[in-house]
Image (cartoon, rainbow, N blue to C red):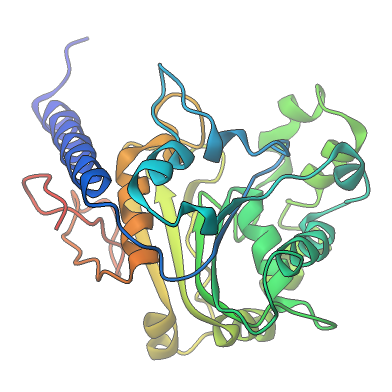
Length: 293
């Protein structure tokens, strides 16, 4: 069946966006920029080796690690967190990972040091858990960036095919991503969400428009929160045509890499509307010609 004009235009616009993002990243590589503070990249569910942040793929794209190694002259401030098999096996949910993550971060920096935190998929929930911890939370997070993170969980029925193939500890971690389980219920309590937003300077939520693994759960839950408070603390960044991983995967998308670089550099992202797919304050950082603003 032939592609309709509207769909073809959308595909062409995405292509332009990616080309412009690649061009800007190449410019950054020549400039050799400086990070303002340490930044930690956290992997998602079953990605303990941190593949999706660190490994480039000829089919899917260049990793953020490869880009950042060329862009930042102080790239030693970038840490790509990994979890050992033993560490993962001790974790029933992202709440457990949050404790391990907190200890890993504090083994690298002083408690008084400001830093940025970026998490893919469940890694974003690991980061949330480390910040909302009641015993010894991370309190110096400047920007918390979640990328394709299921803030409101994901229905277990949609994940069953993967569960059947997984190891026991991965299965339990996946079960605890279900909205009916305690971990997701807890982080979506109004008090818990207020606590998170009060403890970070800004929360950026990246959402891929064709991410079937997470879907609209990538947006931070605003129900019950003061609208002005939410608006001042949360930015939803839509990456058009991006999926969860692999082909069109959001972590290897140059638009994601560029937008994260902007956040880490403290450069304001000026948003232009994208297709009208979402309403109510959800934008993409490109103008109507596909150019990153």
